[in-house]
Image 1 (cartoon, one colour):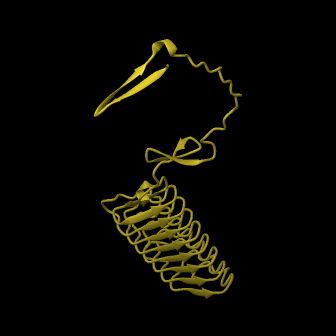
Image 2: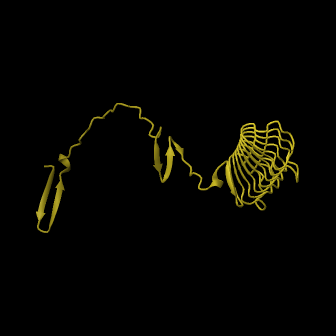
Image 3: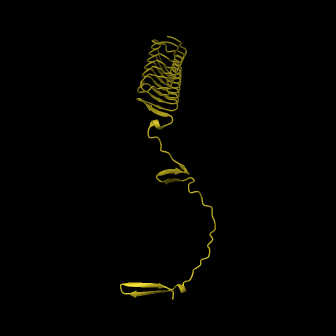
Amino acid sequence: MLMQVTDEGTVGKMVIDAADMRVMEIDVLTMPSITAPSPTTNKLYNVGGSLYWSGTALGVGATNINGLSDGRAIGLSVYLCQGAGANDPADVVRYNVGVGVDALGGASTGSYNTACGCSALHSNTTGQYNTASGDQALYYNQTGDFNTAVGVDALVTNPHGAYNTAIGYNALGRLLGRQNNDYGNTAVGQGALSDLIWGNNCTAIGNDADVNVISI
């Protein structure tokens, strides 16, 4: 007898006969080995609330423009792209917008300027209320105010002239922009007034309009 169970009313007992116990033997099981694929390769997965891709932890993205490597908001100005507004003194400059490599990148205390394009308004120092759209538009502007340049190299050489409008590639591209001179000029069209070195209140409309006029 291996085991006996006796019912004794509200209690009972179980007796195991040690003499009849046997040992059950199981042969060793051998499983063939396999190469398991990496559980992380080319997979997005969550471990403890952190995300990983292919075994590399994913960082948190930027939550504002200052979290970007090539953008920042400083004072009341905003700049986007490498070198844009690089020398903006936050305690002086206000309401500038620079978009493009080195746009408004010079040491400037001017305010209310908008530069969109590589090196647009790059050399601006104290100039205010200028708008430059296009690579190197108003590149050499320093103290000129209220200028508008739209197009690559538009008003590119103007350092001090004011109230000039140039729309088109290289429009008013050679204007020297002397202080208290070279103001109020309007050139609309590719190369319009592109040879004008100095002059006031000139207007030219059309591609290469008045291209050979040097001074008025």
